[in-house]
Image (tube, rainbow, N blue to C red; front, side, top):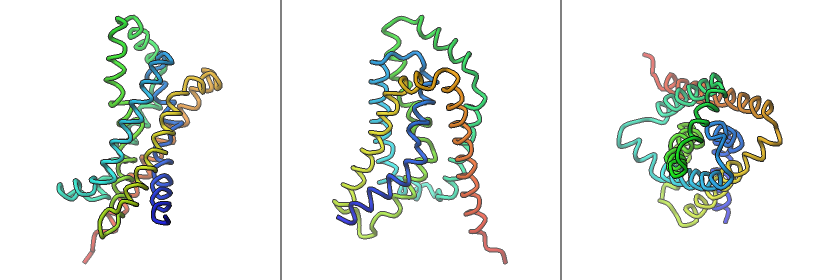
Amino acid sequence: MQDFAETVLLIVAGLLPIINPPAAALIVLSLVPHASPAERTTMARRIAINSFVVLLISLLVGAYVLSFFGISIPVLRVAGGLIIGMAGWNLLQTERPEEDEREGEAQAAPAHARPASLRAKAFYPLTLPVTVGPGSIAVAIALGTGSPHQGLSPIHLAGVGVALVVLCASIYVCVRFSGHLEKLLGTVGTQVAMRLFAFVILCIGVQLFWLGVSELVASIHFK
């Protein structure tokens, strides 16, 4: 039971700050601001399921994939940090009026085309990289390398499953009710919150990049 609790706490504590479901929900809201409540419910469910699959694969087999291609964790952190930093910077520079104009055009599209468009967006970019980005994947792979050396036990697998359910449930709730959060904050408050979270994402990217660079520099043996 102790191993089960440690696995759940380790994964949730390691991934929750990186995923940051409230921030991800606001960013999703900014990308599809005119989605109806029913569409947002479907989209939240798809994003949560996609996130569960991506994180599960990263935790269980990500380290083996990296080993097969000869990619080290520090290199993954550098690459992930660059991508996250660029995403945060782009979000800081995004002007909402342009998004509103594009979404307004989408509103004018045929009714049958809107669900298909949202389904296409549910994985990219709403799940990857907005909700579960390179930083989350890098952390999940790093946590996966700490699996028991004697092999994956049923207790460990159960802990991984419960932890991912908790994380993905929080993602679902935040995305599903992001419209209520927008009403609570108001237009200006939502814009301020999204800019703040975009800056946090930029800082996370820089931190992840610096951590990877530091590990690469420390691995160099000067003669």
